[in-house]
Image (cartoon, rainbow, N blue to C red; front, side, top):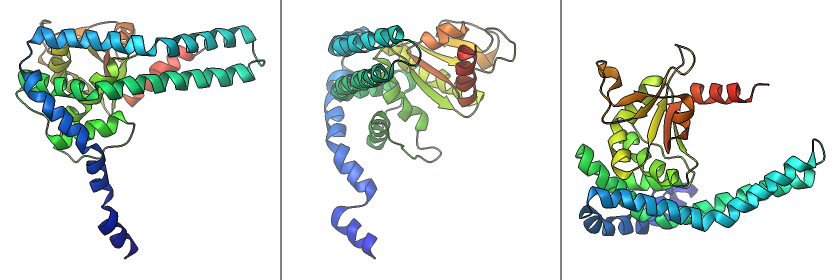
Length: 258
């Protein structure tokens, strides 16, 4: 009974999220007419401008982290307690600086992803899907049922966070979902000037199982349309990388084994 009373007075958790982010959705919608008139080249150019802005506004924080890393390396094993604390603080400062500029870019960036989706796939993000993208950007969980557009929603924060230049990863439970997810969303990223790749199981050994989205790549295997084989390093260097929890985890272990 107390919960019903609380929800009646203050609204349900879902209603509070909608109220909190409703203004952002309205701002995204207000940009739609102007963004829809931009040529493809202007959208890609805007992505480049976003990247420059992110670098400029986070330069001091990045320099601070680099200095902290250098001091930690000089401190030596077992003698860097205070320096480690400074490194953690510098890393948090960089995260905060990046998040602040991404918050400012979010309305236009989301409007651009929506427009790119409309041009390449003939689909347009609904307002509720924009809300899902905002929630994911803020580091929260967005619960969505089958058919509600998880793949489309994820493209919004993926593009936004790719602007930092440090890569944005999407994790799936199996190779099929990661591969098909990139093939479906790849045209959006390509139109906006963001590179995207996928890592798959390395059953063939070596560099097998790594692909970068390339709409001009031709293959006789329909399963890999627009997926050009690449090195593992190139896949991770892409702006956006799709993969499974297993592959991301084992790649991390392989990179850090003595």
